[in-house]
Image 1: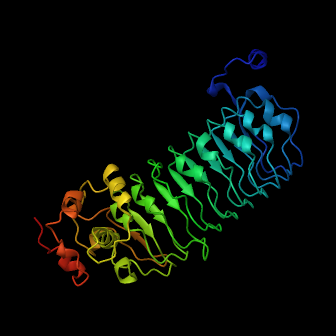
Image 2: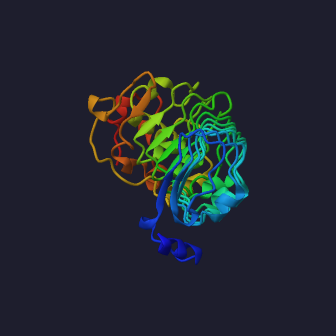
Image 3: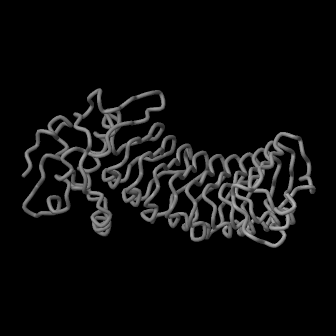
Amino acid sequence: MEMKKSAGRKGQQIPEHQLETVDLSGLALDVVPNSLNIAMIGKLDLSNNNLESIPESLTARLLNLVVLGLHSNQLKTLPNSIGCLSKLKILNVSGNLLESLPKTIEDCRSLEELNANFNKLTKLPDTIGFELVNLKKLSVNSNRLVALPYSTSHLTALRVLDARLNCLRSLPEDMENLTNLEILNVSQNFQHLVSLPYSLGLLTSLQELDVSYNRIQTLPNSLGCLKNLKKLCVEGNPLVCPPMEVVEQSLEAVMIYLCGRINGSDGERTMKRSWFGKLVKYSTFNGFMNQKVGVGSPEDGFSFSDYRSIDGLATPRHISMFSPRRIFSPKRSFAIFSPKNSPTRLWQGRHN
């Protein structure tokens, strides 16, 4: 132990497996004990206490800290010295009274998971997405966020974004940089969120999308190109496009409908020409389905529970019919997407 203390004092690198876990959770603490071996702490759990503040001097010296648990306290602010935690990977500050996060949190560049649920956050640091390049999970649900900063769209390592139960009025327009995003939940922003950006159709890794209980009337046509999408939740929205009779069939039916609108056969060319180039660039028109299941068949994984989640296949089969070459050829009317055709006839349409 004396050798470890000496190594810590000299600032030498301490292997992570030699670091200590200090669990001080659930002890009704009002202050953090000052008798801690700071240099050797790799995981510190101060959750479920009565802490109203964290000393600046404490976080400034926790130079080997990897995991910090502060959830379920009475914290109104975080110390600015939290930016000294250069090795911090997991930070949980949920269940507090935070109205903002210190800008210095951007200096925690090793951070992989940030949980700030159940606070009073009204905004996030403007440039947080430019700095936290290793962040994989961002959970900010149950706050008072009106918007996500533009820089959020630059969290290229992000896999999970949970921003439900806020007051979001919009999402960043340029979200195509989130190439690793697998789960996006912006549900229950209720009357505030009325539309979704077209760039959602360029999230090539997206598997789950939950936009339930908002005021969305139209889903972006570009969502029809999400070839890896397996779950779509749209319950509680006044949807007009696609109509609910399509939504209730299956995820595959929704994808077919939206792809048909991209083709413009319904006479409503709502997508800007620039987006076609991006869809081609991101290869969202390419790929084939791994399963061959008919629309609305019991095998498509579709379950219509009270929550009305849509589980099913990611893209329509024979996706080659949606290739840009076929879609934009002046010689092809692509009549199978006529609104007069039923979903069953879609599969009977003749195409070269």
